[in-house]
Amino acid sequence: MATTAIKTTTHVNELTRVWTILKYTFGLVPIVAGLDKFTNVLTDWSQYLNPAVADMLPVTPDGFMMIVGVIEIVAGVIVLVRTELGAYVVSAWLVAIALTLLASGNFLDVAVRDLVMAIGAFCLGRLTHYRNQG
Image (cartoon, rainbow, N blue to C red; front, side, top):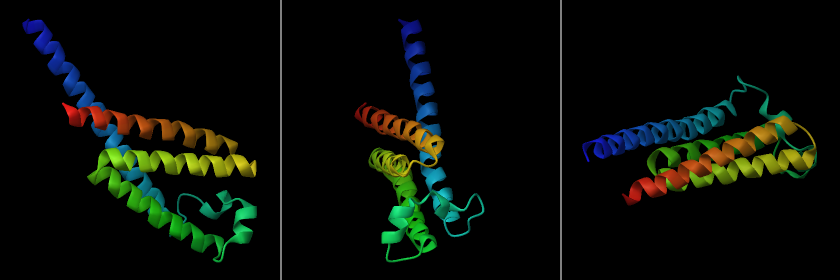
């Protein structure tokens, strides 16, 4: 019986560690990426914008990316304060970005990466749901 209790405690501790890493990853990365939409230190974000979409925008590509940056910052904050909801928001956002990239036929490697990250964010949402139940 004592071995089972130790195993259970170890599993709970490890799950908490994994959950915490995912929470801060999917909370802080969107905030950093969102802030970078204003500075372009990491990359020129407007290059990822589908040219067909860019032509339809009422703002410049840089202006649009700043709006995207605000959305990403808000999504990251939501992950940090309401993790389950925020994880699903970030997951959906990443899928939307990946679909846009796939539709443009450009940056397919980034699209695949974003889909993998979306799966990770979705898993964070599921982990949070079950973590909050028990």
